[in-house]
Amino acid sequence: MRFKLVLSVKSESFGSVLPVSYQYELSAAVYRRIRENFELYLHWLSSNGFAPIDDCRNRLFSFSNLYIPRIRVEYDRLHILVKRVQMWISFLPVRGTHEFVKQLFSGETFVLGDRRSRVELEVEDIVECPAPEFGEEAEYLALSPIVFMVARPNRSMEYVGPDYPGYADCFYRSVLGKYEKIFGRPFDGDTGFSWSLLSEPKRKGIFMMRFTPEESKVIGYMYKFKLSMSSILHQIMYETGIGEKVNLGFGCVEILRQDTTPNDQNFLSDEKDDTSVKII
Image (cartoon, rainbow, N blue to C red):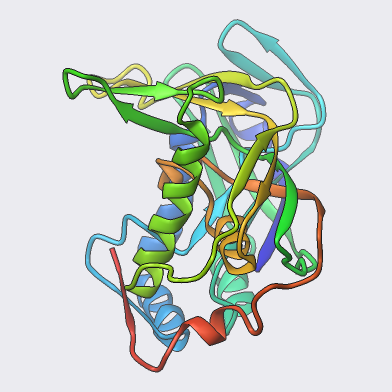
């Protein structure tokens, strides 16, 4: 299930200037709401047949960057020129999810930023988005940078973009790996997998924990792409993101166009049994 959060900009609190790299602070705000309502989170998971472990780094959801209709960029600052911004958050489980999201976010405020500038955002409205009818083929748009890393010969890791020769394989392994983590077994169907790029990719360098000793930089790419694979794999990717560092808000995607002829019947209900699945 996907929801649009409409956020009002409370400029009277701290102003209306965000750092360009706000991803870490946005993810921290989302997870803070979960930590503060952890019993609610556990109940929601268990009601859908999932059993989290203490770490819970790989969660059954993804979320986008902020959509800000009008901005002015000055060096590493975003000047917000509107009174409302939006973001999207998606969840794979369905049972009780609408109520869960309402309790988690209704009327809440988030303060995003770093030591140089901050913005307070208040959740003004939560809108449930229509559910797609997942088929075997769809065109997508990245709503937040898609991140993949591969090992160099010296075993260090590097970020790669769509020009990397094995990039399609990164997609393939990512979505199959997520299926196995969710359901506790490898995908045993015919994926019918193919991937192609539909737009010029835009490279995004996002700082994590800026101006602290733990500062780091994540490289991701924004682009449109076309993907063919089993319907349930489309659903998993749409709801829980693609690539690495999804827990930090990367890899959220939106469907632009799709083949709505389903390949799998009942999707998740056919994949799950009555045994709780361990999410790692």
